[in-house]
Image 1: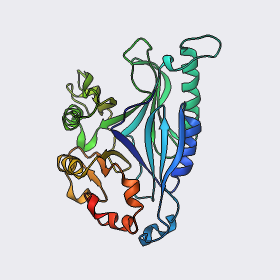
Image 2: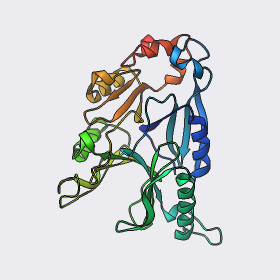
Image 3: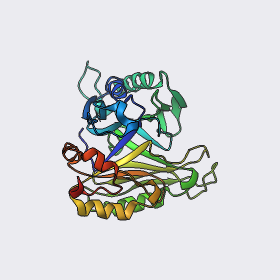
Image 4: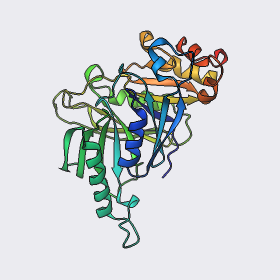
Length: 313
């Protein structure tokens, strides 16, 4: 089930990323977590001195899809604008008593995952049957991360277990198709088959969405799938730094190309972070960022950068 992953969702946590990683390792099927990097022991700015030696990034692998949990402060928090869809495909599950896939085992796993994620969290759509799925629910977990759980049709076109889902509402209302086209064009040389997948417009005015806006849309960057929908509720908040999309770059030329194409708000640029024309946050970093940060004083130098310059580490 491994995923060839060009883009890694990064989720912001308020000092509890290690606990969140351990929680996801138990709550989600096919999941494990580990501390990937730590804050330096010295030369931290005053507002981060209490984090000296603490985990900086916690990596969570879910069925071959990597998530990175950023251990920081209360500055940002994830919200409903970016969630993670979990596709419980019966082909991934067996009941142990007979060979082959099992819808019953997939349902049990979905229900157990839902119970874990909902405990101490907020349910946005109750777990149940909907016109688009025999079993589906939307929940925000105790740490603020949003999840959509769906029982999928084993006879349909296969999709990864985890798919990042972007909801274009607020200032980005109605721009889901535009964004998908832009992202695919930007990463068209990624290894795999980049392109646009299924698109289903609302057809009629629905809440905050016009008839031509997307009730469901998907796109592919390399071998990695994403969902991009337009908000029909009028309640989805704007994108924030609470969830960002990280791209590891092979060299400075690739950093520069993506930075020039993506960055649309100079005020939001910091430490390799940027905000694009739709409000989505990205991190454009060297592929060997952990190695670079091991150099004496590198962390402090990075804090002074906007676009990351490899030679300046």
